[in-house]
Amino acid sequence: MTDLPEALADRTAFLLRLALNRAEAMGEQAIEPLGLTGRQYGVLAMLQNGPATTQRQLGLTLGFDRTTTMKLMAGLQARGLVDRVADPTDRRSYRLSLTEDGERLRARTAKILTTCDEEFTQRLSPTELEQLRTLLRRLI
Image 1 (cartoon, rainbow, N blue to C red):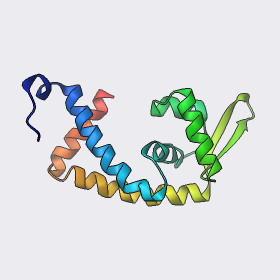
Image 2: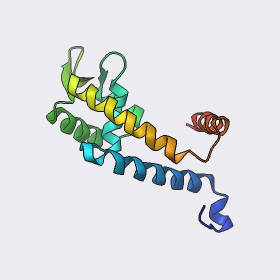
Image 3: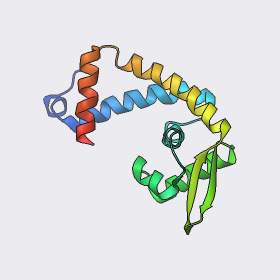
């Protein structure tokens, strides 16, 4: 680890951000050849299981504002990765689902990101990694 002053080395939020920045950079670089960003992958991953969700629900779950969500969805739809249709129960809302191409790209990207995750956490034992994930889930 980089030598950090105590004022930063003891700041949980700073350490989380530093770890996040490093992990994100690794993942973004690995999936760039696929023409996908981490945020776009997040959308595809959220849509992989279960029934179509609404654009609003997706944005709330992923922590995206409305404008960001709309831009992400428009781009993914234009690439034929996501279907976005008006919600029959609320005309102001859209229902989202993965297309077959979207599912194929999601699966391919997931494999790449799993490799990145394994590389990023390789200095942790399996027990430590599970503890870290458990603690992070408690924080969010």
